[in-house]
Image (cartoon, rainbow, N blue to C red; front, side):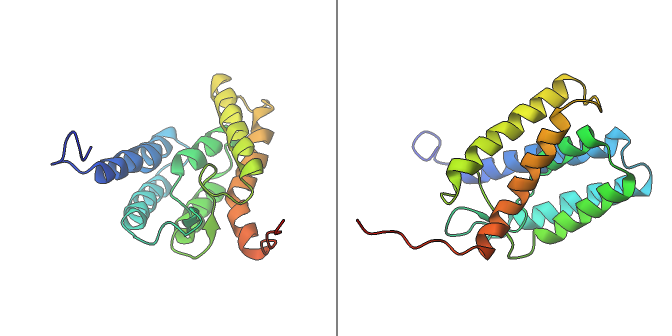
Length: 176
């Protein structure tokens, strides 16, 4: 963009697009889905959108190893899993609040393609998550679909891999 359209900021445009696709549209979809009726839906949409806008402007959101410091506001993934699993209101609302709080912690969340450590496992798991999400949507989030278990397992890995990396020390590299 700097060469072809120098008066426009490509980084800012990317953040706006990311906010719309990862945060605003998924939050609205959750609100409109009926999974959180009444005040719980309003609370969730406010917590998600406000917490995420504050997270997006934090210059410390990315770590040196290209992971994220705090939950990376991937509400699109979370809400798709909620559509598939359809847990109760309390579980969804608690999860929304917990993940919003997690955005402002030093807990590490991997970027499946950019975080080098464990990438040989993380990238296939992220691709598997995409497959399971697509399959779940294809079968209209039918509760008996096997894709639900795939979403649960891959989501747990993607959620906790970075935290595990913080706990498990990296092995020193061998010098040949």
